[in-house]
Amino acid sequence: MKRAWILNDLYVAVQARKQGIGEMLLHKAKDYAIETEANSISLSTSPDNYSAQGLYEKHGYKRDEQFYHYELNLD
Image (cartoon, rainbow, N blue to C red; front, side):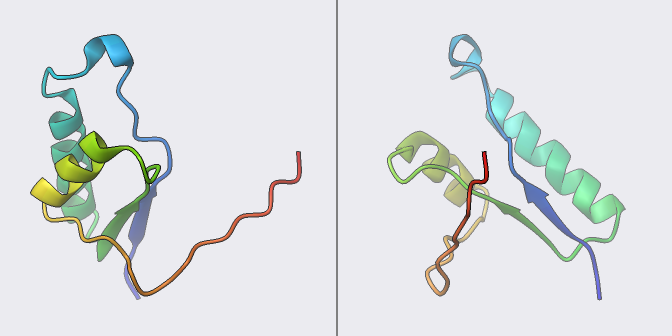
């Protein structure tokens, strides 16, 4: 069994976008995952966030089309 890193809050502030920060964050996350011998990195974004989807796919992330993910909010 190996580690699997889950990035729940990968976010770049609106005023800081289009400056390569998202790519830097993805590179750092990948470097850390390799350093810690993880097996994978998972992240999510909203269905209408096409910029993020394009960035993730550009860096080799594949959209999960096999499973639906569910959440129960208890707040």
